[in-house]
Length: 222
Image (cartoon, rainbow, N blue to C red):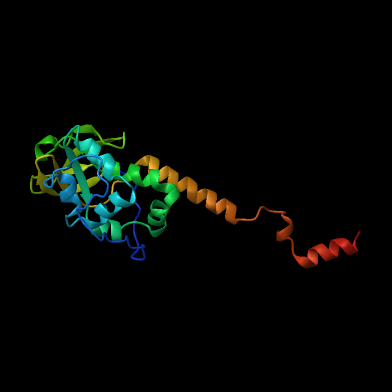
């Protein structure tokens, strides 16, 4: 059964991600990647928002290196999940240059070593399995029984809506309903937001906080 995970609901005012000008092209490749690779397929797929984030996070070479060691399973959120279902403040946090590590962690949380298919999910709603992601966190595979007797598959608390969306010899992409947000990234965002809130509030008793008439009154009373 899926567990609750951090998900930031999203107004439609989220800042858009810049589109790639040359999809499928990897500049300065350190590794030779086949044109039939799952990484090239991701860059050329309809999961444009995720592929754009991969480039913004400077993860192309990291994923290329991973492909030289093992196949990859990529969980790709729907474009709407990145365009309209993320809090605008959280999206701005991810896109700030100083927060690239958080962006990298979030993306790598969606990538697992190995080529995992529908059969890797438990068929029993009372059971679940854990798998390591490239973010060094673990994600849980589970299923939830439907009224018709079928079982919906989940990764973490997010529903898999399109199995085998893209299949290549070295990997597979499954479409998921929304973004998986690792606890570590959620903590960093909340810590940054709290610090900004604190810095925006002038401490009580600070000179600039005192009304002019109060200061004048005190001087007269001296």
